[in-house]
Amino acid sequence: MSPNDRRLARHLFVAVTIKVVVLGALWWVFVRDHQVPVDAERAADRFGVTTPAQGGHP
Image (cartoon, rainbow, N blue to C red; front, side, top):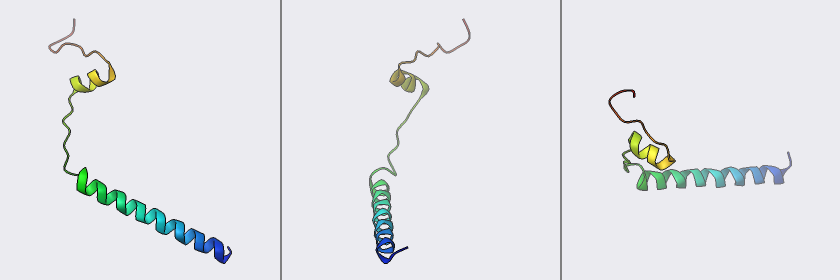
């Protein structure tokens, strides 16, 4: 591996590491405590699926 290749690899490693740290910090600040309630009916509505009525088989 030539010195230029080593330098490029080091710069790429540093750039990717910084991006991962920044994304982790953004998630920690903005997303970590956000709770999204999901139930079967809401999920089915979102995907366009009809859910059977509760209480037994027809």
